[in-house]
Image (tube, rainbow, N blue to C red; front, side):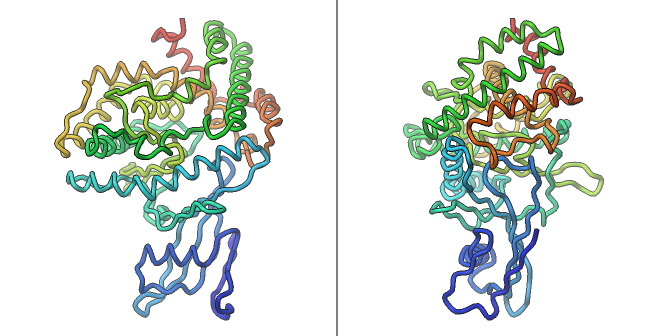
Length: 425
């Protein structure tokens, strides 16, 4: 869908709005991007996402025609907007976490980049932000990375070693930048300086907490039913039944005092929250991290487990875990050494912390994978799902998942791995 809006002939002072986006917002983003000499000529809204690309809010784009130094030019911006949902609980969550992302770009990203630049390192690989508003309908205008050749990786497909290696490097740089920033105020933790960093899916409101618990319960019931049908997973079923009443606590993963592994985490590292750029041979050469709605201060191993158990199939993860952790540790060391800091843990301690957070990885996998591997026609659409429909949705999805060829390499392999490592007795 694309709808254009020319500014010529528009009555002076009259507000111009299209699909919830206003002319003033477009102009503000343009000036922040191109400078005060840029003059807005016209703009149009062009949708480009499909079902399954995004689960929180609305993502669209704006195509802009402007003049600069007497020459007509074009540009585009990706727009993220909050929206209203039938589910009151989910609505509370969206309101809370969209503010987290706005504050990330307003407050944290500039400071993290300042630390990296001071250490002689490149900026974080995140899109530039040109306009935000936390009033009314919350909105962000972000750099349109498509113009630089970045593409979304297929969410159904496990990432390979080349893609995952880039992710490990950038996640390490993200964590390292936060350690450099924290070193400025060692006795004042970042989550005290930025209280929004304690916000998560579960503490947005009482209704939001209940929504998440109900969704988790429904998901676990679905997975147990699938395991019973597949057969041979009685130990995993018992483990899931034991985990079910405390899964929400595992997902929240609250801070429990100082730890050498405490960093600013992305919070939602999975395939749909990143874009890749490729060289002429098709080799991935750069990654951009998107969607900073769950940015939080936690153990760095929560980001690692989230990525490993949502975005890699079993064979890729199991055969390359040591390689990926080496890449992560080396990239983190490089950032910290450039900022005259040392890594506060050894490579072996990193492995131990990664394993210690496997239950969190399982929780994120249980939460995410049924939706990730679902066909587009069966993807969760929270825009149309009142609270009472959550369990019904899971029941409708069970049979589809059972016959999905991605189920074993993406979900069942996780239970096999947890049995081998002793997490599942």
